[in-house]
Image (tube, rainbow, N blue to C red):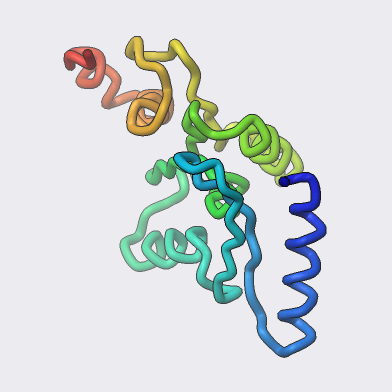
Length: 151
C-alpha cells in the first residue's frame, strides 16, 4: 500500500501546481487504523510556519521551544533547527527520515528520538516520549521530572 506513496505525493503536487495551487503535500499514517493519509495544506501553513510565527511573535529562540511529533505532517518541524522529539511509537520510516533530514540540514543535535526504556523509566510512546524530550532538552526541569511518580 505504501510502496507508491512518493509517486502519489509527486503526482498530486504536480497536478496542484499545474492548476495554480501552491500547496504542501505530505504523507502521514493514522496509527490507530493503519491508514495512509495524504495531507494537502496551503504552502505556508505547515506546523513549522505556525511555530515560527509564534516564536517571532513571542520572542522565543529555537532552543526555547520543544516540539514533538510522530507523522509525516510533522516533518517540516522535525527537520528544522527547532528542538524536536520523535516519539517512540512513530514508524521507523519517520524516525529515519527525520534523522536524515536534520543531518542534511546541518543540525542533528536538534532531534531527539524517544526510546523504550528511556529517561524517567518511561517507554517513550505518546506523552511519555514528549516528557523524555523535555528531559533531554531542558536540564533545568530534570530534577522536577525525576521527582514525579510516572507509574
